Image 1 (tube, rainbow, N blue to C red):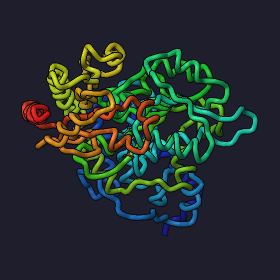
Image 2 (cartoon, protein in one colour; image 1 turned 60 degrees about the horizontal axis):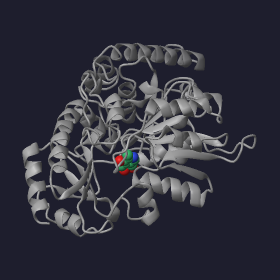
Image 3 (cartoon, rainbow, N blue to C red; image 1 turned 30 degrees about the vertical axis):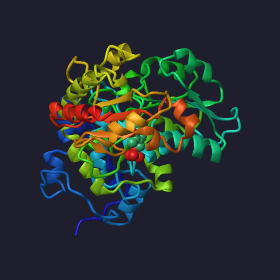
Image 4 (tube, rainbow, N blue to C red; image 1 turned 180 degrees about the vertical axis):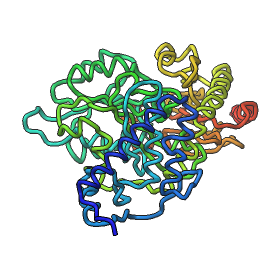
Length: 459
Ligand SMILES: *Cc1c(COP(=O)(O)O)cnc(C)c1O
């Protein structure tokens, strides 16, 4: 029998594992977007070393990792060697997804990113923002600055959970195109700046680079929810942002099987609060500590379902964006439609910013995504009579609160995603009773337009 391994031997084995991983990352960084999305860090070597040669990433439906002996357990649980240990903290299947997302969010740059996958997009937002709202008596009372044009769930998390329940001041930026408004809201008590690109459902954007510069001037991080753009169009880390949020539920996993979130960070983020480890590698720190204690973990099944869809993200975004532009152009020219908000239209108030930030990966081509908000013409500004007639007449397009799906979905936001926000909240988010969000899918654009046309005729 060979001599038993000591803790030091295990740490050395761990070092080798980390060196191999660094090499794999280096190779992946030389590949194109579609290749990275397809392979991530799962190589033939990974397949043959403990994954039974499986060509696809296996689903590890298991709670915990076993250790060879006490020395192995001791080294692993001191986090002195790579380990996944317990599926609330980590799991190999979840890891395959995290590796791929980290590579895609930092694609085309030499940024080293890390990702922490969560049970939902909301859990990713909560995990990312919790860390900066910790008690620190050496600082003024905490506040944070956020675009008011955010997803309905985010609005509720900020206004109800953060403000009403926890008393943390939320400073809303009503016009995210206006840099002066961002500037006027940030002060010494601000812990982070938050924006959505583009926002759901108002389809508002902001100048990521300029707002990030403002945040950094105050020594605080910039967090961007880029769910509706996805890394195939917009990668905020490239423009200086510190943390990116994705609801993997949306266009990343377009086939609509599961709920999933991710937060991805660059190394050495800027923050006024938190320990050195937190600033050095935020996503990994979050995963090993607060995430472990709070438990918003994702299922390994959902991780692999999301990963399987993620592989074809760029080609879907390309087609869905082309369809989006066709549908938006049709609607803008329709006499029964008052306004169309779509970043690809010349009439869009921040078309120039969209041109800067929304480009299909590996091309120099602007693509403007699959999502638009329209306002149906009404007799009075607060009416929704015509919008409801149109909405109820849709035959192929689904009535649901969903987006980024392979199937086209339409949502009347005032009575769904933004019902609970009240009149005041809807005003902040600029949601009118006649606002309808349309998220086009992968169907033929002609059939989508046909359905919209017949529904508009019913008004
Ligand atoms: C849907 C959505 C979320 C929340 O994600 P879930 O996975 O549903 O929790 C967050 N941000 C944006 C922009 C979204 O569209």
